[in-house]
Image 1 (cartoon, rainbow, N blue to C red):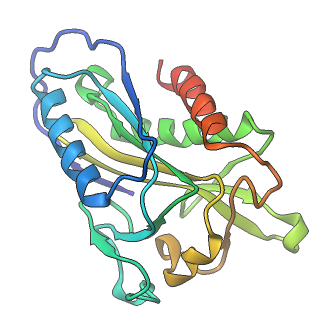
Image 2: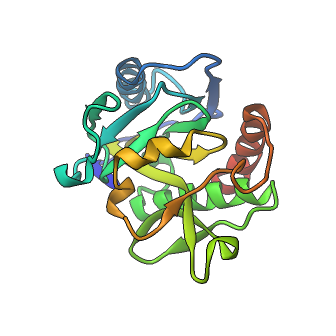
Length: 226
């Protein structure tokens, strides 16, 4: 799920280390979007370093640039925000770790496909820290886990990806289900895929805390992105 708008590369100095922010309280979607927009602009101007921001949102739905109105099954259940990221409808809420990733691809090869692939591998590596095997599927965005306990061929989505790129600076990012209320996903067709379910670490029997997940995400980010 990518929405990209790029510009020619300019002469750049080497990037400083990626900065990390972790928000302890839920952040409204409007505030998060404004802060991402401002930081992405500052990164482009080389006034601020790259940033990974880990947070939770209050319960809400977001509609990406490919969202189909028929996939919003309960339009009055939670606030719905139209967003410039690629993709369709997603849910965000308490118990889900959202990672907004603001990197300058001018210093990272200007390869959008590689960036999205690295986000996928970051999520898979994070899940592996908890003994969970995350997998990719052709034609299905996000990271999936097999659920033989739920039936033959059953697979559930545990993490989502939706990014936007402007002037080679990325924003939006990923979400990983730690312990959200999974019934909240019933109000949408997540990413337009109705044939499969949604799961979380806790649903899989992994009682990791949000802090445990943050530690794992920071560790594996360095392994994938350098």
